[in-house]
Image 1 (tube, rainbow, N blue to C red):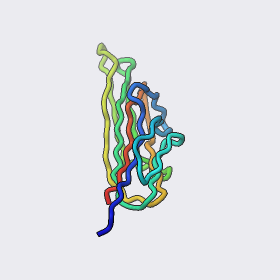
Image 2 (image 1 turned 120 degrees about the vertical axis):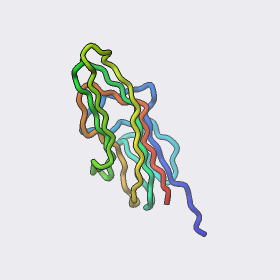
Image 3 (image 1 turned 180 degrees about the vertical axis):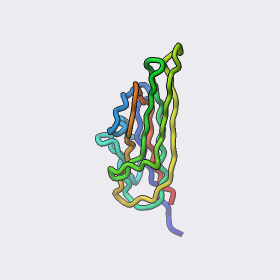
Image 4 (image 1 turned 45 degrees about the horizontal axis):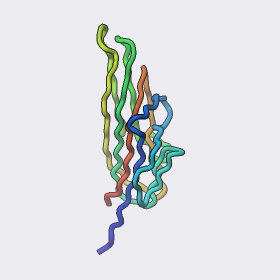
Length: 147
């Protein structure tokens, strides 16, 4: 029976540190979490898998938005593999504060998918679009080999 060696890696942002969302950029991770068999990198905000197989990829983040009532605020995050965004694997959020309302909101978004990855594949989270004032914080990218 073959021995299965755990393969995993994670990147996070500190819960108290928010980043302004900018379309066309990657989520800016600041902390390398536990890892084995992957290469997390906070310089280019990526996790590289060091062996081929089936992986579970999870991304979560908290969002804060504020602004003028009647103004839409939205953001779309999508997974990127080897620099190619996969728009079928995205998280979208939109809110529009009614006139006369308090114009702040905090929400949590998350998504988990499975992929067949090759050795050397590089995983990132792209902010593909944003409008209004959007700040993300307490973000996490977790990659785990399952087969």
